Amino acid sequence: MLINKELLKSNAASLGVELNDEALEKFDCLAQLLIEQNKTMNLTAITEPDEVVIKHFADSVSLFSAVTPEKEAKILDLGTGAGFPGIPLLITRPDIRLTMVDSTAKKLRYVADTVEKLGLEAEVLHARAEEAGKNPGYREQYDIVCSRAVAALNVLSEYCLPFVKVGGVFVAMKGAKAEEEIADAKKAIGILGGKIADKKTFTLSDGGERTLIIIKKISQTSAKYPRVSAQISKKPL
Image 1 (cartoon, rainbow, N blue to C red):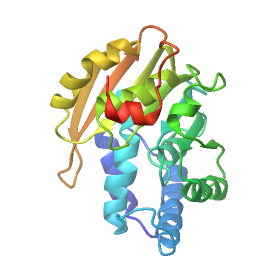
Image 2 (cartoon, rainbow, N blue to C red; image 1 turned 135 degrees about the vertical axis):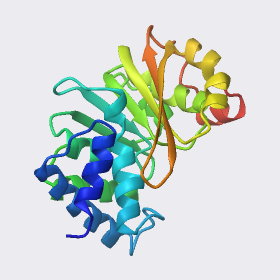
Image 3 (cartoon, one colour; image 1 turned 30 degrees about the vertical axis):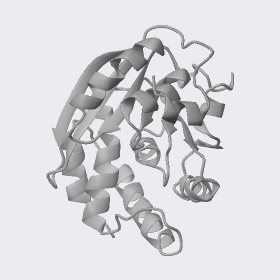
């Protein structure tokens, strides 16, 4: 056993997320795969087992403290990187229909391999967000879209909201200082067909503050969005 399963279980429980023994076993396996692969690939700067438990695993499953997906809900993790929050969400709820999107093929190969080794199923998509967001196979197809990416909320919303179906939600997983981002993003969110529905703040057991911003999709996103990435970064909505 690599990770402290009780630490993970208690952190998840404090967020209202129950993890069974099978899930805890898979999380332990995931930690081993992540740390081993990280020796030859730059997947994460977080490699100490307790830190992995809190900053990657508990932080990822915190999404389920904000939204409770229906059985077989379609969820998209945009900018998944080394598979966060996607893989922990799938371990916790193997019934979800998960798509993990990233533009870095090397990391996605690790993600796809890891999902298979854990005996799970997910779609792993190598694409730029602004291109996938225009693709009819992905556009407005998801019940929940989530992202732990570091972009500002007004920028992140333009990448993520086009994937959310009307009635679905986009959950931006942020750090402590989210108020300013929310204020700066309200106009962009409205233009893209969304509305801020709720905000949840919590503190992880290592003292790290987190904010989940829940944005409801209330109308279709105009076909002109998302724009190309150069426009999005130069002239955010």
